[in-house]
Amino acid sequence: MVTEDTKALPAEFADLARFADWILPTEPERYAKRLASTMPEMQDFYDAGMARLEDAIAYCDRFDLDDLPDEARNLFHLMQSLVMASFPVEVWKQPRVPDSGAAYLDIVREPVV
Image (cartoon, rainbow, N blue to C red; front, side, top):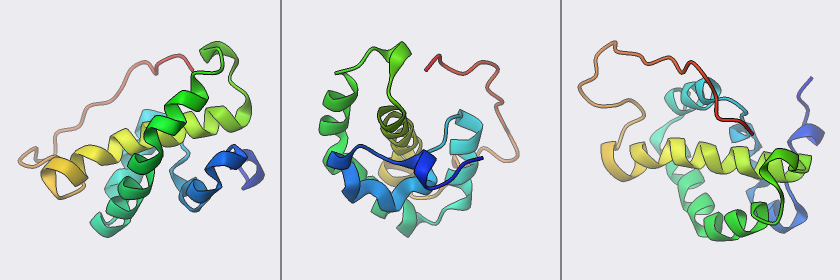
């Protein structure tokens, strides 16, 4: 069961805790969250996350990718969600890919994390 405790971030990233609903372990979950989010919500997440991106990468780089502590893994997933929100914010100005109609791409295999 996912609880707020299981979505804890490292103490250094407490300012990002309000975005815990973006801590999602799979690409389909992140994509669904993007589609269900408004542009102001994504912009807020994007602005806060991009300001901490380099710090988050440096923090996660302290650990072996195959042995991330839970809080670091949550931070890693949060940054993956930030990537998912970046194109709508930076390029499309909408959650969906423009002119894509009902097209959908289903990921077959997740990256190992």
